[in-house]
Length: 343
Image (cartoon, rainbow, N blue to C red):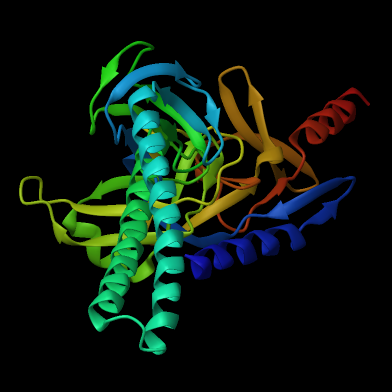
């Protein structure tokens, strides 16, 4: 892709530097330029990051903080569930952990006392073993209570449903007061900055597309986006026989593209020689499209048929030949010719 468009840029520069001044008018000699040959296909915009957030605990919707079309920062709470049951479980787990920790301190003190007496051979080993067993049991209960508290804390956090990434709300699936169960969809969102385009290609051009790896996404007349990456899927669709191609777009800031929008994808399949003239050399007069072609010491307006645009230049399909000279500024040329006639 870069190699072909580099060729295009070099060709356009050669046109610009070949300009000359004939009398008072700047002119350019028309030449055949080798440019990429493209075929257009229908593509569809998709979001790279799009997901549906679901409930991870049972509850009733207490508050909904965002709606369709709202921008949501990453990690922001989007829905709150009533958390009475989860809070009670958390409080019970916290109390159980506190009780276990207090009991552990008691058993530590008791074990240290028994251990000192045992070392002086004042108590039987069975008493020492019993104290050690009570200490180990108390330690295990603290670990168990701590784990239970973590689980309760996690379940309590599930009542605050957060956005996994920053983006825009695409769909809202719940209302305030609605009871939800684990797995119930809450909201669907996407990141509007990271988009891609999916397109189906016929197998007949697959070899050229794979070789040149050049394409662009056309979003408006004379406006296109070059993808950061082009991916051809390694298999054809068994029903349509087409091959899937994915184009990763650069980060979008203006949000002109959105998931579901149809666009045209121009895929380079070769190279073609074209006659190019500057867009400023085109004169539009009623239904006639023409250029001022140098004829001797003057200029004549000649009707032309135009093709595709390439930056500030446009292809001429018919009406002029390679080697002819045209005025770069059609408006100025028209004025100068009119002045010459009136003299």
